Length: 272
Length: 324
Image 1 (cartoon, each protein chain N blue to C red):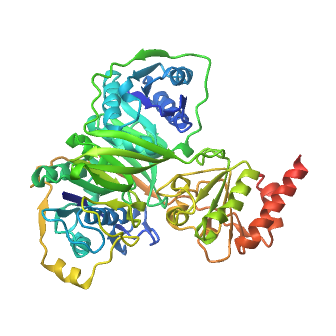
Image 2 (image 1 turned 180 degrees about the vertical axis):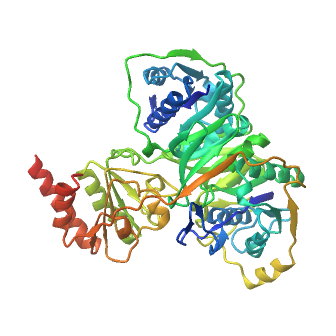
C-alpha cells in the first residue's frame, strides 16, 4: 500500500494565544506538528507494517507532505524519524491559502505520486475547519472515511473497514481503495489499526522516534516544490478578515462546602 | 439575490434537533439577502420527516427519496446536495455542524466549487461569517468570495426554529443514479441511553480522568438523572474506556452549552474547555485548586470527588424533596 499523509504545523495548543492589535501575534509561537496529523502518520506506518516492531511490508511506502514555510522541514524531518520514507514540502504561507487551494495542491500530488490512500488528521488544531479531506475526496471522486477511530485492511488490501466516530456512536463503513481517510484521536489506541499483515499490538499513542530513526531521517529525501510547479493557480477565496479574543468569563468563586454550592446554584444562579 | 438551501438532518423518522438552529440560520440569512429559503431532505421513507419540515418556514421542501439513500453515505448524499443547490440557484448551502454535516458538506462544497465556513456562530453579512478557532481562544470573521458558499452551523449559537402554521410546497427532487463510488455502509453501534442528548440537555454533568474507572461514573450518572441532565466526559475518561466515546465533550467530541455544566474530577484541558466554555453556569469539583477548570468555573469546590460527590447527590436530593 502506498500512502500519502498530510502534515500541517500549528501553534502549540497549550501556549497562550497572543494578539497584536486586531491580528494574531505569532512571533513567539512554538510551532509543532498538528496532533491529528501526527496520528495520521502513525496510522499510515501501522497500516504498512507487520504489527508492532514489524518491518515495512515489501513495496509499501509512506510519503508525508506539508504545505508551509521552509521551516516546516523540521516537522517533516520528525515524521521521517518516526519511519516515513520520504517527504514533500510545498512552499506556501497560511495567509495565502484556504481549504480549496490546499485540497487542489494535494490533488495534484496524488495525481503525480498515485498513492492508494491519503491519510489526514480530521482537523488542524488551529483552524479547526475539518474541510480538506472530504473536499479532496470530492475533487478526486474517491470514497472517504472521516473521523476514523479504527481501521482494518480488508479484501487483501484492496479496501478498508473503518470505524468512524459519529454523534450516535461508532459507524462502520467500508471504502474501496483508493480512498481518503481522516483520523480521530483514538486511532492510536493499541489495536485500532490492522494492516494486511497482522502482528503484535502497539503501545498506545504515536511512536517516539528512535535514535536510529533520527539518524536515518537525516538521509531521507525531502522534495521541495511549489504550488505553481504543481499547477495550482489562483488566490484564496476564504479569508479571515478579523480576529479578536473572545470575551473573558467573569471570575468565579470558590465555595467552602457542597451545601453552599447547591445553595448558590439554586438561589443565585437559579439553574437547579 | 441569494437563495438559501438548508440540508436537514434526521434520524428514525424525525428531524434531529441540530437541524433547527440551522433552519434559524437559513431564515436569518434569507431575510438579510431577500432570497428564498429551501430545505433538502434526503433518505428513504421520508414522509414523517417531510411533514415536520414543511412547517418550518421554507418556500419549498425538496425531497430526495430513494431506497439507495436509506443509509447515509457522503458519497451518495453530496451529489444530491449539489443537485438541489444548482436547481434552486442557492448561493448559500447550510447544514448542521454535527458529524453528519461535517462529513457531508465539505464534500458537497468540493462538488459545488464552493468555499466553506465551518462551525459558524454568527452572521456578519451575506458572505462573511463568524466562527471560533484555536479551541475557542480566537474569534474570527471569515469572508468568502466564491459564488456559492457552504456553511455548517454550530447548534449552540442559534435558537432552534419552531413550527408555524403555514406549510411549504413539497417537491420531489430527481436524484438520478445513486453511485456510492466504492463506499458502503456496514453497521452502526450506538450506546442507548434514557438520558437527554448531550447537545440538547439543559444540565450536563461530566466526569474526568480523576474518576479513575468506569464504575465511578455511576454516581455521576445518578447526579445527572437527579437533575434531569445528560452525562458527559473528558477525552481522558473516554480513551481509558471508562465511558463510551460519544460522551466526549470538547474540540473533538461534542460542543455543549447547557444552562449548567458540572465538571467532576476533570482538570479542564483547553481542548475540553473548547467544548463547554459557552455554558451559562459552570460548577466544578476538583481536588487540585490549580486545575484549569477553576479558571472558567463560576462556582468551584476544592475537594476529592469521593467525599464531595455523595454530598452533592444528597444536597440535590434534599433540594428536590423541598421543591416537591
